Length: 297
Image (cartoon, rainbow, N blue to C red):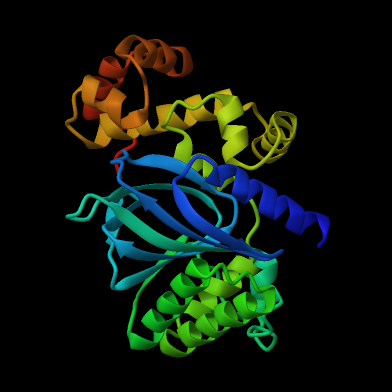
């Protein structure tokens, strides 16, 4: 087992300590878990340190993507790329939520040999962080087998890998669009810009943002400075104020609504920050833009 695989297992199992689960099967590239909870949770950002297949057994999985709320039931398979996702669970009528989750590394997909003849440069860029596909009798048969492996504690690394490779092959055959998605997993890196675009409104501390980026605090600051040529705090404020400016010019939202939409914790903070950057209050800017058509498309 190499160092990266050891880190994979440690990171995922550490995160699992905060979740209710039944038995866990694992090898150096895969980790199987059966989740079961009767606790209602709120939508929250979760750091997925590895990619995952999610089979919902009871209840519904809810994930927020680009403002859209997507529900995944027991007739669908959710595939998640590693990174930050906003999600929660809905309980079934009996008051429980259950799911089979299979975590897998980028290396697992790369070494599956299913993509040896795929030219990554011709596959195109896939910006999707998730993919939802329908299940059928063939895919559901995998779920039954996974449940039985967990029930019997059948922790055979070769069997586990073969069954997940077989599932991936079946998905590629049934849903050709998954080829680009899986290829993008092989190519993916920890992109700070996409992470920050997801989280800049949430008022997280710099330490929390470093955690979500899967970096130490010092490395996060270094990488951020290299990419954005400014500090995280300065970038976040500027990004929020860009949104404020858009809302002032293009909507009729009042200032309280704009503050809420853009992640400012108070109107006074919004007013002071806006005036410090633009030399004018938000209200005055809105009035001026109405006269001079500032920022109008």
